[in-house]
Image (cartoon, rainbow, N blue to C red; front, side):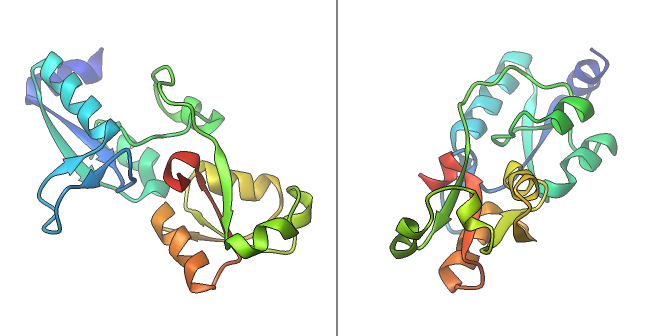
Length: 171
């Protein structure tokens, strides 16, 4: 209630997000207009509340610090509902089903039947993401990068054997 009053008084809600297709992404090379599921959803809520929506690109691993510092009013970017998220934020009901998946070169997939068989691989994960949590839970060797797109590029470049990212991004 307190945050909503502050947002309405300011006339705008500052939304923290990352470039994460299909949730939030640029429609043009000049990076002047965002679109995506969460972008459109946030704009619709802003219209209903009668406030402007300002999107701010954040470092995903610092989302809770950004909220605490009030540099953003909310995170709207396909955030997985984790124990950490529940502890640090007020979270809406889930509106998208998501899962963490492993992405690797197509010619290597048949060599790995389960999580245990991937124990010796090197992974790339987005810092502060559910993918990083999955890597920790499985005791995988991993490198945290800024975005899920960066994690995919690490696999493509051969600097990581695989990455753990959201299924919506993998698709």
